Image (cartoon, rainbow, N blue to C red; front, side, top):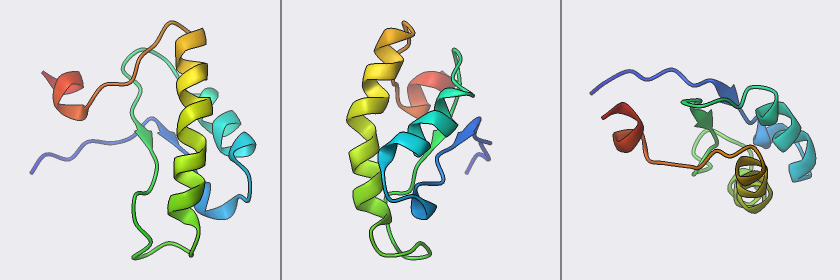
Length: 78
């Protein structure tokens, strides 16, 4: 297993709306940035996954506007 640090932490578990999550991430976006969002609620409050999912569409729009695109870690690290 490889340790991969993230560049931008969404903090979606602490927000009720996607806008502050996107703003937090956007400040750290650059080519090669690694964004951390949570995909389960094992150690996060209920609703975290729904907030992460609600963030993905607007975040993809931000990436597009910056000329960036989302890739898998395997693609990024290759």
